[in-house]
Amino acid sequence: MAEETEDFAAMFEASIQPKRIDKGQTLTGTVVAIGAEVAFVDVGGKGEATIALDELRDADGALEVAAGDRIQAVVVSTEGGLTLSRKLARGAASARQLEDAARSGLPVEGRVERVVKGGFEVRIGGARGFCPFSQIDTIRTEPATHEGRVYEFRIVEFKEGGRNLVVSRRALLEERQRAGAEDVRRAVVPGAVLTGRVVSVREFGAFVDLGAGVQGLLHVSEMGWSRVVDPSQVVKPGDEITVSVLRVDDGAGRIALGLKQLTADPWSQAAEKYVVGQVCTGRITRLEDFGAFVEIEPGIEALAHASTFAPSGRPGSWKEVARPGTTAAFEILSVDGDKRRIGVALVPDNASRSSTVLSSSTTIAPGARVIGKVERHEKFGVFVFLAPGRIGLIPMQETGVAREADVGKTFPIGSDVEVIVLEADDAGRRIRLSAKAVQDARDADEVRQYTERADATPAEGFGSLADKLRGALETPRKR
Image 1 (spheres, rainbow, N blue to C red):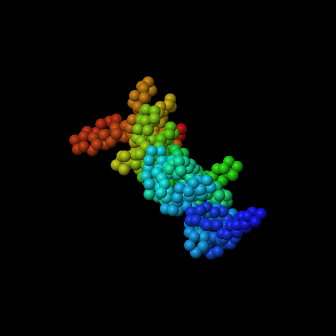
Image 2 (tube, rainbow, N blue to C red; image 1 turned 120 degrees about the vertical axis):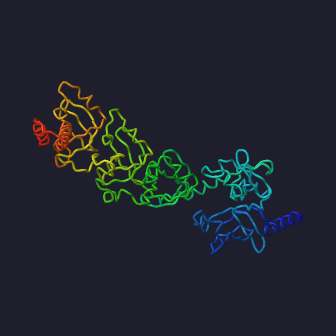
């Protein structure tokens, strides 16, 4: 009986004696107070320990714990009291500590040594672990960017006494992202300007991580005021960019982002900057069946309609002179800033060398002698392209072609024709022309030159020819 009493006393004495605490041991305790730089943790009969506040903050610097919360940490020092850490330092982790960390989920520090087949070799204390490519980050990155970096990892497999370790950095990142996702979503509202990281680039745009795994789509149409064909020429995975939140669809979980909205819209000054009749340099960007789109400045595309190109007699032949990438002079035909539309026309190469070639803004007055291109034939006459938006008509009686003759042979479509303007309204849209008058004028000029010669002998009949020409140039009856 006396022996049993002594054994019980010994056991009781041992139970109230502080147990030995070793460096590297994992403890669970309760946060009892938070100071300026450290938090105080009650670890039961083992006493009170401290842990640096930096160990208890999230990625944004906010404390993750409060008084009363229970935490799990590792003893990193026993000198002058217990000092805890929530991660295993890479130079102090033993096999036993790694096993505890694998069991408890405690993060461990590791250095990425090199790229190996399928992933990375990671040095953790005296052990070597393997991190698959897919587990090094939440986004796809170049493997070489991680070599030599020190990260926190979670041990997902612990085998053969620590000789076979598989670790994941992505598991920790995603866990922290989930914890901060709600705060990020509260900041994602239309009109907000946020900084994010490009996760991936597709042909239709780029996905951007706004923090804590919350992603938005930066569509290719929102990348710049200029037309963007290849999004990868604007952003690349891993780039940190500033974007504007355009729309948020909470139901579908979609966030639309914009990049061009952070710069001035070039269309806001287009109506003041461009006026009808102005000639500017433009670059043809693309062709459609109805015309060519022309970039006259970054972010502003004008349209050169197919009808503004001089006819050649072959369907679609205008595309031969309007090749994408071509830079040329274009005349402004119309400007509508509200509808973001500008009409232009290609300025012919010989426009500056010949006063007889018209522009769309040239005033067409009766008596003017100009050169146009035959556009089409009708029973009542021949239509002539004079300038973009300026089509004139040579009535059949003004062609100078006999009634029974083939007018198409005399005026092939696409051929140049010199005409005299017989009639034109103020807007220059209703234009009546004469090819016959040109020939009559030539005849009259020849007569004049002949009669002015010193040895010329006046001949009868010339007066009637002059009268005929004068009649042709008089204002005829309207169509």
